[in-house]
Length: 212
Image (tube, rainbow, N blue to C red):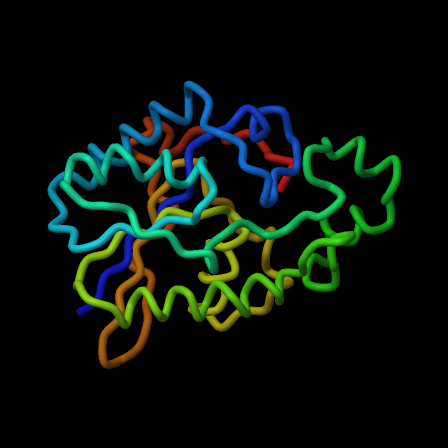
């Protein structure tokens, strides 16, 4: 059985400020560094064969403690990079609303219909991220850790669940959370989604991140 541990990168200052990050290369903040260490601790007893990460530094930095613990080199996959927010990148939700009110309203209510100004749609992300995940799964190793981003994780999970991209806002994955995918002869399944016990916040109320 193939097992893929999907990890959302740790927190950045832009996560905290509610800025759209997209494909801008924003590093982890202090909280994010602690979350990365907690991920490594949570997965220390898993016999990992490979670690794969988005090339953006917030994903690579989240993967680093686990890679060092396991003596592995994190492979990089361009297909796992975050959604391109285009002209919204670096802006807060109020700043975006001031210029693209109708598009932002659609993003929050009909996300599958939105093409970010000079950026991507959720369908664009799914069309590159799902093949990237399949390439990872088809490669060597039975247990693989994949470090990526919120929108990427959600479109992957919606694909496994056969639910429409309009479901984007119906679930939440915290920074540093772990989701497990398993692939067998029966196909893909999700035995664990958004596990955050290692972060000390399993049942805590999570802040709504507006810059997604």
